[in-house]
Image (cartoon, rainbow, N blue to C red):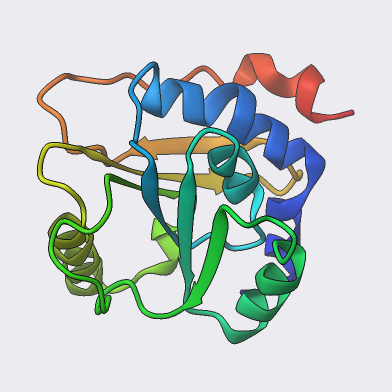
Length: 172
């Protein structure tokens, strides 16, 4: 993770996650009570997801971010920070009621590694539940996305959220 990504932990980005990206991606669906989050980064999505589920297990591969997140969420009993590689999770099949991964897939290259990540998350989540992988490419100005790419496994066609209207909310 480089210094430019620190804005991904900002209040502006957290607001974008809470008010635009998660509502658009998840809508009124519930991820269940025991959710896996892949790639929490600086924890903006972790903040929002943890408010709506009983237990959130956040798997992060970056050593420095794991230390940061462990300290940051030490007082939140419903959040468990795990240092690990989401392409090789040590959990049994169907362990989680749902899974989410937001704004981090562009860090997983090459495509074969992303495919392994998708397969592994599909293995550890309950087969009745979907999981919500969505990535966003932040613009140079923190808190604003130029592109949000849904990679949600679904038969329903989804359009991209209109983030241009979020300018005033995210530039404060």
